[in-house]
Length: 340
Image (cartoon, rainbow, N blue to C red; front, side, top):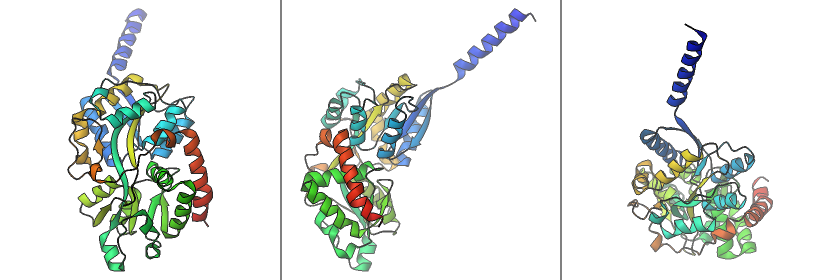
C-alpha cells in the first residue's frame, strides 16, 4: 500500500470516528437528583447527545458558574430557585436566548425571562412552607405550627432543620420572604430567635424534610412540593402553608455565556420546556407547578390559589447587591450564632 493510500485511509478512519462521536452537553441540575436523572435519561433516549450532569444546590451552582466565568465548563443550568439565576444574568454569566417555546409558557415564566433580559426562563413554580413528622409531634405532644410565629415555640427546640442560604436557593427564598414579610431588622431578629430551635443548617434545600420523613428531626422548612413528595412516598409528613403569608420560587433555567456546546444546550432548553416533558415530572417525585400552560399539573401539587402568597420581588432579591448584602448579614447575625 502506497503512502498516499495509507494517508487517505487514515483520513477516512478519522472522519468516521469523528462522525460517530455523540455530541455532548454539560449540565448543572439544581433540582432533586431523582428528577435530574429522569430528565437526563429521557433526553438521551430521544437525542444523539450525551449529557454530563452534576447535581448542585442553587447557591453552589451559581458559585461554580461564577468561578468558571472566563473558561465556562458548563453549557446549561436547569432548575433551582430563580434568584441566583437572576444574579447570574445580571453578572453577564448567562446567555440571552429567546426560545420558540416562550408562547407556550405561563405568564410568570415569561416574566422571569423578561426580567433577566431573556438570560433565564421559568421552568416550574412552588410555594414555601414546611413539612412536619406527625408521629414525632404526637409522641412529644408538640402543637403543630400553622404560622411563622409558631416556629419560635420553645417546645420545638432542636426539632427544626433548614438549609444554609449560601448554598441553598430554598433557604435564600426563606430569608428573602421573611424580609419582605416582616421588614429586614424584624426578619433577622426572628431568625436569631429561630436559631434556638434549629438543630442543623443543611446544604441542600430539600434535605430538612427528608430528615423529618426519616424521623431524624421534627420539622423541615422547605418548598411545599418537597414535603408533598415525602408524603406521597408514604412517610408521615403533614404539609403547611404559613398563615401570615409566604414566598414562592420560580425555578429557572439558564444557558451559560461562552458555553462550549451552545447548540446542544438550545436543544435541551427547548425540549425541557415542552408540555409532554413537563407532564412526566410527578413520575420522578416532582410536584411543582409546570411552566408550560399545556402541561398537566400533578394532582398532589399544592394549589397556589389557596395559599396566601406575598408579592415576591424577584428583580430586587435576585439582584447581586441585595442578595450579597442579605447573605453577608445572615452569616454575621445567624450563621455565626449557629456555630457558637
